[in-house]
Image (tube, rainbow, N blue to C red; front, side, top):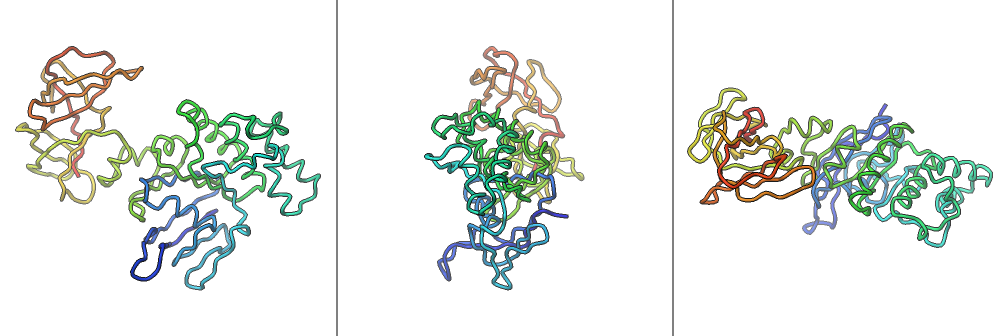
Length: 355
């Protein structure tokens, strides 16, 4: 049984001729114990979808069900208030009360529900222990690190034992190193507790690391959905391929196609590639940066391009190759800094995608 089901959801801001459609018929589901990431650029509708599920935005059409409870039905003009949906919500800003202790921040919602104090104490202490905060219950938010504050916000969302936890860019306020640590912690916590989570993020690495399934939104619609591995390795559209990775785009002209096998011309040289998607109307050609292989000698399915510069990234060098007239610009990774000169850049046919 699905913990969350959204069917043909439409939402717009404004009315009449000035209405601005944000969600344009979005359908999705979340199974028990599953983590689904809503991924997409700014303005794609991912946060609006999360807020509609939470009851913080009012859709126009469609339905939303949490388990077997209907919480929104546009055809019946029915909308359950947010406080009755029993969902855990972690905000981007954490939204902690600065004058309340960690214990009181987590207990706040339970006190509003007039739960017995003994049960509140038991629930709060248990969830703080699960998140490694058991010894910090009497501290105030300003006495804690950003990562600890984030855990308090998660504890507050989990203390209800909600069927679904909603995460709105939960790691965006953390610095880069802490984000990596928090990413691992959040994934481990979700798996350990068997949570069902819907998470909004604009960071594709974060989405791939934490989620079981990704929904990529583009202009109010789902562009593609699937496991992180399928989204990255077998994109169905040019938008998905470009959004999900670091890519090189080449000025290729398709000469022939036989099934998925494509022969194309790049700066006068014939290369073999692989057709992706339903058609090739745009004839856009790209390859992931990490798939380009650098050789000092002529290689199969390769083009020769002069080295422009190398940038040190710590564990590797990112090398930029550029032709004299500027019509070819390719990036590739190298274990060592390269000497000046021209190199053959091998582009494996199965990784050279044509859309």
